[in-house]
Image 1 (tube, rainbow, N blue to C red):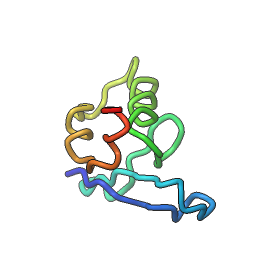
Image 2: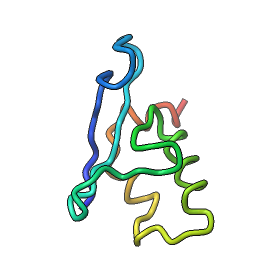
Image 3: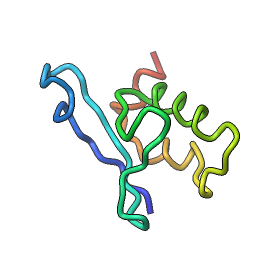
Length: 81
């Protein structure tokens, strides 16, 4: 099972403007790590990482739609602007 994790500004420079998120895999007991690492600031950043990571490799049965469905509004709101 995958879980969305809101990291807020815990990893960034605590500037109050950068909000990061991650995904946790409860089956493997680890954070999902793609091309650039386990954290992202936007859905666009995550999606690009996804495409680079899984361009030629299997994706463990995961789909982009599954991850997107776990994201709260603040992650996806930039897509609507």
